Image (cartoon, rainbow, N blue to C red; front, side):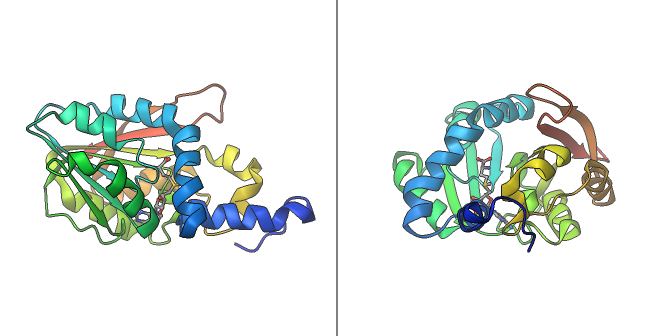
Length: 220
Ligand SMILES: C[S@@+](CC[C@H](N)C(=O)[O-])C[C@H]1O[C@@H](n2cnc3c(N)ncnc32)[C@H](O)[C@@H]1O
């Protein structure tokens, strides 16, 4: 997006930040962005795991795990007989998580990959988190078809996204690859892929609070 929002001196910084948020990379990505994401989004991610409610023995996934704040609570929920799949398009986030979760390799598989081509088998996932990641995906239909493909018939998705009105006010979203979409575009897209939104949980205050869309396969 090429908007010129924001004070002129802040634009280069906002541009760098937006690029890092969409795909953390380099030294900045590894040393700073992962921590920033965890500090800023940790509370929302905790609420998302609660909404997903993975069960002992489940196979859960976090797509676009970023700093990895969702991985530990998912591992705790699925327990010793479960497994967690962590997928992110960013090599920097993968390397960072690989080091931090080196003692969990028996139950945590980390892979680089995209929401539009998930390295996961059909109907293999009981519960998927995807938080603050959909903004960076151009082909929504392909992403939602992929989610529907990998979710088990009784599988659940928690898709977390900032409110579009809040995003439009945030200067960083005018830079990088952010796509601000109306909520209905998201829910209609999910429905077209066969995913029914059962609930829109709003952690936070006010009309522009975050959205945690809880969805299931329509046939289940
Ligand atoms: C803003 S961060 C959010 C990270 C974390 N979920 C959170 O809420 O703190 C977006 C993450 O999604 C990843 N990402 C962007 N596009 C992606 C795609 N198409 N498939 C998978 N991951 C993607 C980025 O590399 C980044 O780690």
